[in-house]
Length: 316
Image (cartoon, rainbow, N blue to C red; front, top):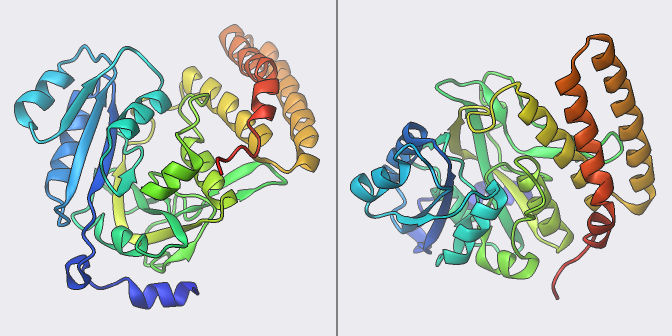
């Protein structure tokens, strides 16, 4: 079906056509009590009423779990040991009862009242497997992403509209390579499996969408599904931890999902780039940064055989 047909078809309220499946919303959290409060408050105000919320708390020490128990008893709370975000999301995914699942709504995000309505309508189409919305910088109309595309030759994932003020230029439904915060049909999860737990923080959304597209599903950007995001509130903006995680995760994504002809190209290109960055760090006498750069490259080289084995794996 053409995207223009989707535009005409999916602007009616979901109640008008009786499409009200249960939606499971998975929210991972670690020591983000105030952030989590704002996130859950925004969920509580949703126009779409048939949903469940699964908070996966990663052994927080700031009272997050007690806050959920006391003030949000309608949310399912799972307290885990210290695990990675992707692992936490998979724990929530295993508990989800919905026909539609929001696989990873970060605790540092708030959502619009009508965030779910258009997404649920679009996912009623069998060929559409994943939908995601428009994300803004927190408290503003500056776009973080209006869907994304992957340039396989350069190796970059490109956030459409990033840094632009919203003037309605991205207000049409469109097919994209990936969306942040994927809203996924249950049968897609059953087909392609859980989130890849080898990622630290980044590229989990991109990887999941690419896997769905390889399995034959469409990924659609829905402009009326609006969210606001405090960038890197969990990892720390411009931190060495953020840098190392990004380097590790972006390299794994390329090795796992690029075409066979591009794998060696990206491996060589990233190795050269790392050596150049190391030279720069040495000249600036930044030993910690150097160790982070080396650690990211070694991590991927050690796991390269496992990453290569995971290429193209899809259950039948």
